[in-house]
Image (cartoon, rainbow, N blue to C red; front, side, top):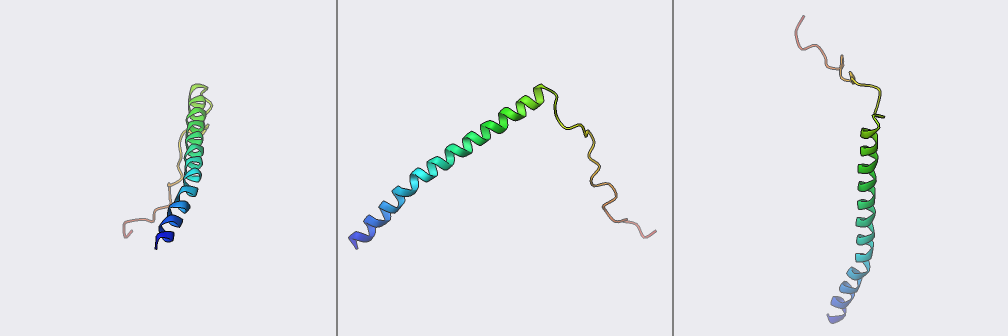
Length: 65
């Protein structure tokens, strides 16, 4: 019984560096998204499509006529 507890603790300690690396990667990616979004906003280089009429005409008629 004692060996089972030791092995479960050892297995958990091996996963902790992977979780830390994953969290660090996510933080770097979020920071990159914020920087790219800020640069896009400051340089006015966003999309040239100002109106998205993607949903126009997709809904069926709601009246009987």
